[in-house]
Image 1 (cartoon, rainbow, N blue to C red):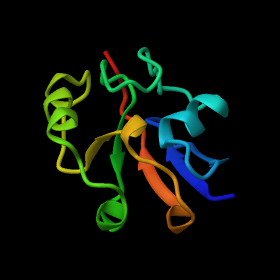
Image 2: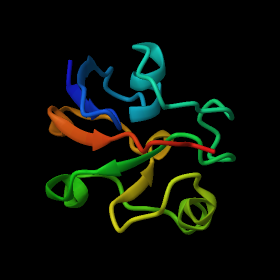
Image 3: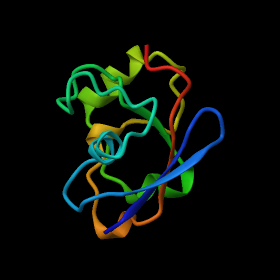
Length: 107
């Protein structure tokens, strides 16, 4: 099972198992990662699962849709070039070791 490394805003790193076919958000929620609120449950409606993807992984994850791009304009923490909604990143075996940072606020 692939592992996803979540760096929390305080610097703590959590490594969690992520089931193939699930999203990064589901892996966070299922493993109690603090800071991933996911109010809409993964329906890409709220932007409360915002993460910063380590730049070395950007070319390996699914492309961002126009809708996700629009939602990222309303994040609680500043949007960056590496910002993504974790509900829109499906896990596959090629993402073992994916590194993301949880922003300080989702509101």
